[in-house]
Length: 266
Image 1 (cartoon, rainbow, N blue to C red):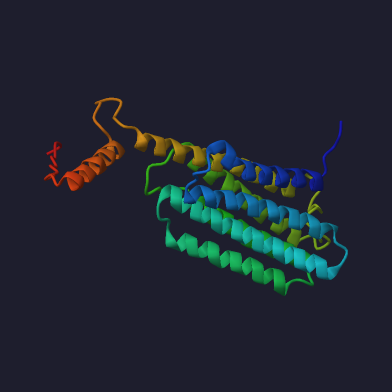
Image 2 (image 1 turned 60 degrees about the vertical axis):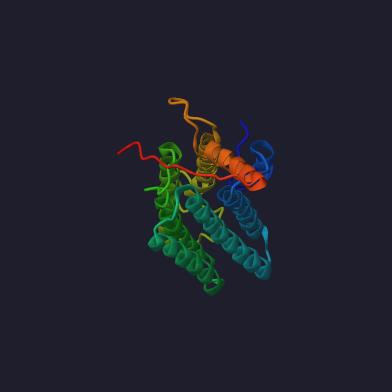
């Protein structure tokens, strides 16, 4: 049986995410919402970050390793920020404390990458801690929506985000006690690799994003329906379209136009 090493598996995940992110508009239509665009940018930036990380592990030059590592950290931070904006578009305004925490942790990760550039083991530990806490904060943003949203993808997003954060924090703890770890591919123990879990969790997170994308499209279609399936009464979009036609006719033919609102609940 052919064994897939860490480098090959991460490379496959990165390329697949990037290809799917580029092809999604063809399958789901070109009229993507702003939140969907943010989610697509997250996938592209996260894929780019994986590719930069893998390139850094293959570089023998300190200058190139430094440049690629910093670029990978910046791409990862930008990806998380785009995903935060996507959640805001899907779920409404998010808690500012968590949003600010994500921004601070991303900046700390980037600063640590620059300050610890000569100490690769500690640099790996610092990045895992900052990025793990940032992902944990991001996962919490999926809870308590301000706008209607399906529970399935929100709970999956929260669960997989929390698992990713715990895996990164656990690997940072193990790496802190094994200073011989100098790259993403090296393992802190003889057991199952925690670094293998991160790209796998990213792939599952991609599934949650697709579910959120589909949920948004379903809600948009429901809002655009001409009438309610139970009562047969026209829905908001149908009323708006009809009102626009009546207003245009009243202006064109100089006719009076009135709007009557009836509160039937009370």
